Image 1 (cartoon, one colour):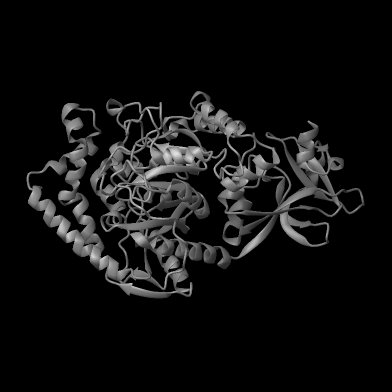
Image 2: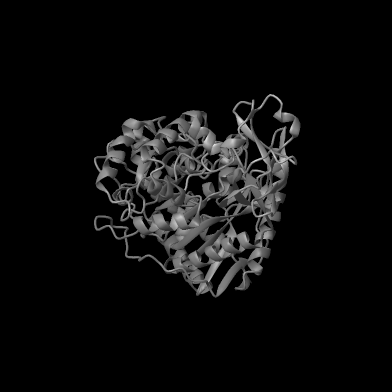
Length: 579
């Protein structure tokens, strides 16, 4: 089946409406993709027809028009309950089988979403690297030698690898944002209490959030509109209505250059400087301020008594199950049992936090704070050799968020290097989610509008629904329209594996008109794209039926020898229909 590499709500719903695709066909493809990627350690409970079929059958009782997530597959971090499926929190000895769904899962299913599996995570959601799991290190979706980010590692990579449209993660100290950065996704972390955390294995219950990963910002917002709402049985739930997006009056940036780290530190710094330049051009007032209090607040999470909340949640299990906990995870958890973290220390920390919250409230009146989502990344090998320090670095610009009752959205902001995404995070006050939404919209739209682009005509495996559409997606190309070439091309089926077409321009009147797709691609990606095209194919000027010319796939004339002439069919899709 020729599904796009990156799955989106918009594309799937279009196919469902046209009756050109069924949810079961999508699920079967996801199952196959999961098998192919098995060595990437994305799943703890992988996609299977046995698990998913009841949710497919349930779609028969739902109206697609009133169910905005009808037939949309999603992944669930394995510290969030899915009824009848083990919740492990990344620890086999801890596993239990819940009898009911977590409320956020229940709300998504009620609107037609299909849970496809339980995703790998840093054990007990304690880590930002994706390497702290007895189920294996989750590989980065773009460069397998690099970390995937944690703790919601499998959730992010499942979306990035086309095995879910969106996924649920959790975020206590950055776990819904760091994996988004490292896998080129949007990571949306609502305000504390906006989404219920009932049915979620607690890390720090007072700070935990359920989050969403998606390719597109608007799809994360769609999921939020379904998942958000008070849950009467959840003591941490609170009334925070769906916010309306509005552009902030101020964007706040750190006056001191952020610290960058890891093997790509210089490239990350360059990418940050480019992002700041874009922010300066948005037309919103920019202020540069001292943000040291954010790191002071963050230090209380793991270097202060607040880490004791993790021990309060899991200490009894750790003590009762020797050797069940991942070694580095147990070290972090046990730090919360230190004798100096007595009741007085907890209250002192709470009083400090209250002062920092007041500072944040003053700083972000009608404003949004922007920081790098992370200051770098590491190879998985580097993290294994130095697990504590590398993990701490990944949280430099994330750990303060929930402590200060902030909302946040991590968004892509270009590349630091080839297949090395860069991203920024927008922070707002709990009541300021509309501002981070407006600012994210503005930045993403500005980035899209400011890039120079070129049209590209494709006629075969790079079209929508074909195997190489993923190359178009990876080069950030966007489908524009269907079109037809001028009637001057010989169309051949090349004797290659897999079979692919070639368009050869003829000057003797023997050619025909060929169905095409026109895509738009950033010029910065066009050179990389051209290098991926094998001979005898190449990029040249393709003449369209209206007489205009656009860059597109052409074929060298010698390839016609020994190739099957399929000009009379008029297009690659028609060949497949015939066969």
